Length: 256
Image 1 (cartoon, rainbow, N blue to C red):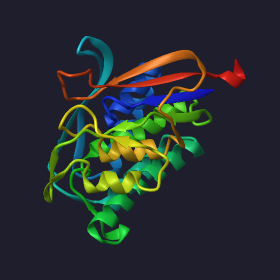
Image 2: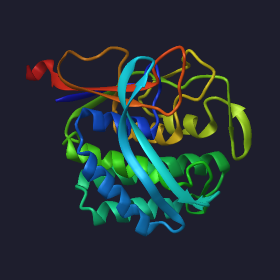
Image 3: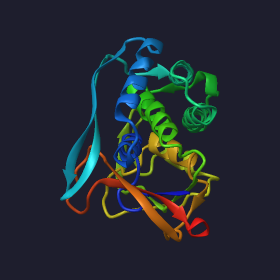
């Protein structure tokens, strides 16, 4: 079996990959129940509403994550987010593959921030990634992949659109892609490309998830028989294209 993650137009974020997996058929109730578990491992963060709903992005039907949270946190130690993800994963009984994926993904994000700021990984503080929504994206994706038994599949991605222009974050303004994105993709097999707009299309959490899933990057889809397709919508709206991540699951030519 093969899973193709098509991020060549709209890029990728954590909520887009999670929503696309729900669209593909992952158990929505199992994901939401597992995500609520994380509240007990992260102080001062409460999820007041979470759901996956059908939306239209430039005429394309897709699934979008709706997340409302009650928290007053501007920064948080990265190790606190990591602890929450690992302990939640254990409590809900994720598979070994799911736990390893979730752990490796948050480690990728922490390592990138460590390199950017010249700090030890144990000293890194998250700003943009300090919210419980980082946990929601990583833990939820791990649960969804587990539910769909996709960890044993060959996972391929297209070149990834990152957009252009500038981005503003806790330390000011920088050109897009931001420093963390470059560190995450550095030394991976994944190819990045600009895109058609001057906006951020790929987030650090989305990039961290992707490099821990896809070991191969290809401009073209592999020979495959399509079984199912998932469409995950991002929160932004663009006039030039549908802000939707496509994932395609099927059988490779060798298994036809």
